[in-house]
Image 1 (cartoon, rainbow, N blue to C red):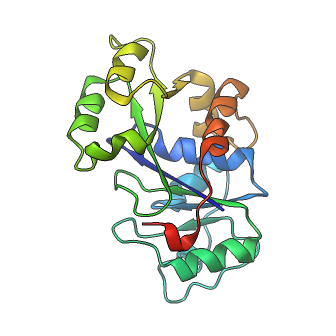
Image 2: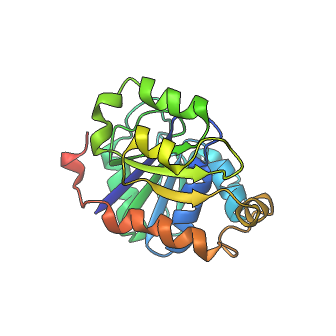
Image 3: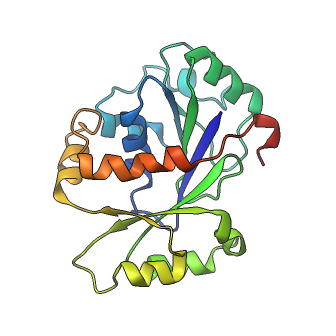
Amino acid sequence: MKIISLFGAKHGVGTSTTAALLYAGHPDKALLIAHDAGDVRMLLGMHRPENEDEANIDSDKFVPHWDQRVLSFDNTRTPRQSHLRTALFSTNAEFIIMDWGTTFPTVGTPVCMIDNAYVTLYRTKQMPHAQEASVWKFVCLLDRTRALTSHDVEAVAGPDVIFLDRDSSVMRSSDAGLLALRSPQHTTKPIHKLLEDTPTCSFSSTR
């Protein structure tokens, strides 16, 4: 079982969009759990549930349904393993995608979202967990109109960064809530490499 935990060096680096893209490529296999599931649902063109507590794994009222594939959680505390396990098995999913916002994840494989802005790269180096960055995966939303290049990003994040172009096709799809239907191939192919390279783990071995 795989858990991919996305978090951002700062806000606005594409964490929720990347989580939605990962999910859109494997909607029958993935379970997506986000700190703001409402945003992710809108990106995917889904409606909010009538009762938010029913889709919140931190809620005492949470009872998983087989068709609940996008759930919410409180990213300020570690999700309960019993709820994660129950949600995973009730949906018959093969892996979990988690969107932690700017909070460092406590379960799964950490994937740090960055862009090629000076402020982002500076904050990446100053993160409390930066000494562990050698075991993180990095995804960079590359804006080619900026002064800093991919080489500058690699100087901070290492040579194995997955680069995605920040282009209008992704922005148009996300603004229209159609990422699930109009995911650009040049973006989905590299992003799904994350799934292939993520090691399998068990709940008992997660932090």
